[in-house]
Image (tube, rainbow, N blue to C red; front, side, top):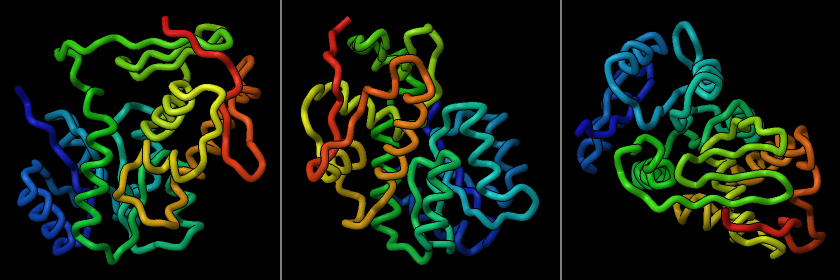
Length: 238
């Protein structure tokens, strides 16, 4: 069985070697890539389970590569960049990153975030593992947990990032219950996040926009003033 692989796309040789060594010492398999082109060659040779991307890369930059990965596949992305302002973080999450970590970073935090992403996406490539099939239906929509797929009432599958899918699954499994931000952070991203992490806010906003663009999607999640968010429809197990 092929082991999982984490691609570290970083043009700084010392940082690239440091991250690869750190992940290897943690029992994970990692491969370093200096450019997006090198990453593409790696992905052609083997399955990549997570891409750690720097933004400032020679040639195609990290944001462009992240956008391309999100459009053309389901490889989760962790952006690790010296551009750590809120605006930069939000832009990274908006183009499809599953998480964003600013440099300089605490090595333990990097490993914790990597493991959190891998936990959330561990079944994505494991079609050979027999898992219980869980499916949910609500307002004409359907959600398949095993396939990590969501279909709107028209039958069209909606493209969601790993973080967006996990957020929607939280709401679907807790219908008509008010969920606050801390609960959503804990259930979808674990304890690896800091107290001011805004990734869940960006992903929730993006998820609601995607839902609202489809039939009967604009009413699925409502804001509860002073409390949080609520999935408004009844949910049935299919």
